[in-house]
Image (cartoon, rainbow, N blue to C red; front, top):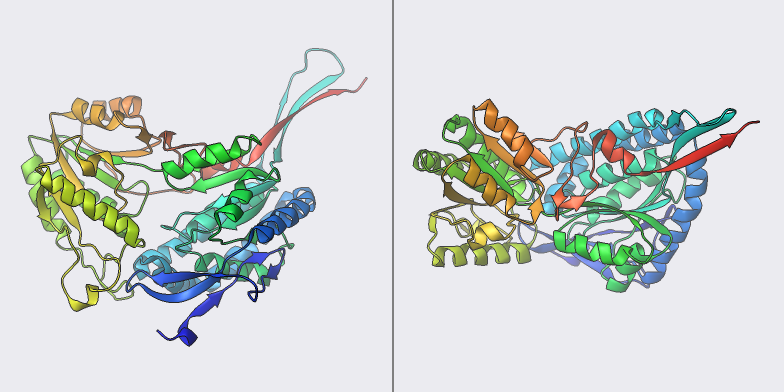
Amino acid sequence: MNQTDIQHYRCYINGEWLDDNTREVIEVENPSNNEVYATVTACTKNDVQYALETSEKAQISWALTPANTRAQHIIEIANKLKAEREHFAKLLVLEQGKTYPEALGEVDDTITYMTYSAEAARRIQGAIFPAEQPNKRLSIYKVPYGVTVGLCAFNYPLALIGRKIGPALATGNTMIIKPHELTPTTASEFCRLVDESSLPKGVINMVSTKSAEAASLLVESPITKLISLTGSTRAGRAMYRAAADNITGLILELGGKAPFIVCADADIDKAVEAAVISRYANCGQVCICNEMVFVDEKIADEFTDKVVKRTQQIKVGDPFAEGVHMGPNVSKFGLDRVNNLVQENVNKGAKLLLGGNKPEGAYFEKGNWYAPTILGNVKGNDPTISEELFAPVMPIVKVNGFDEAVALANNREEGLSAYLYTNDYRLHQKAIDSLEVGTIFINQQIIGNIQGYHSGHKTSGNAGEDGVFGIDHYLQKRTIYLNYE
């Protein structure tokens, strides 16, 4: 690719596009071929400070803006995104590597996140309680935090923006978006829509940086009152430390290791279909993906045989091409890590039933490609079980019934999600009581409804996103004792 073919994107602060004459840039690779197709402005520490200060200034008047007016601004941006649906989907394919149909779905999800929050803006509720003396009133208001920071992961570069700015803005906060350094172009393009809208300047700022000092300022500044992070558990621990001095509020959606439990009485064909869809969606790069299968030993051979045959139907290739089910992984580093785990697991006795390498063909010589992979004869403490994969690899463990599967699942530090396939209604109830996770899919493949709640238990995070509970995390409570004598 010639230098003239490389598209440049800028950061957006206080309604202004940053001048690039004195700043470095971040190079963005197409994961299909590892070619640099774009650059993005790399913000300095001074740029981050400017974003913080202008966001703080904008928040004062934004908080006083009527909720229905705030909602109209959010809807305006969502409508602009809807009008450019195909453009943003193509950008997502280039940047992240997901297939074009998956990218269209991500744009649609982003619009849904924003419109749901806008609709909820005028439904924010406080409370009134009886006072204990005459001529007194006791009421509780919900008020915004102030300046919030949205730290986005690379797997859903656009949807995570909508998921965070929707509730942040609807509740009267301003937000500084920081995209992942692997996928910053979508955020810049999203800010173009913001710039073309009537949203007051400073309500949404966007910074992208490769400076650890600049990034640290964003979360350590006393101006920042709430941080929403979607990322790894390691990043979440770092965020706790960074937020400690200022007691900054945290919304953390962190790593997961979802077990896919298949009981002896399950509908095997339905379980197989769900296991495949829930593992290989977005090349396995979904925090609530099926990360490991725990299947009852009575049906393990039949299940494994069928899941291998179903997975062989997945077509890997050009994510823009029709009929392709899976594109590349966004991160070469992440893929190399997972490949090492697979090889280590095979050396420990696991059986490679499918994949374990790049797909064959000249097209796959460049890029972050990995064939859909299945491992059998895996033990409960093997490398592909102990580590989060975030890649198209499915390890299968035979278990002696539901109780052993739950014990293996709960004997972990993470607790984000879990899957259960069984027709025994008693096990449905036992799973609800015993699985230590934030979301359970019972006889259901991977799915998410905006009115639900996406949260983790244990080291998979705190607080959460989506629905009325997610919106409430962007609000503080203020208690009023009124004497009207």
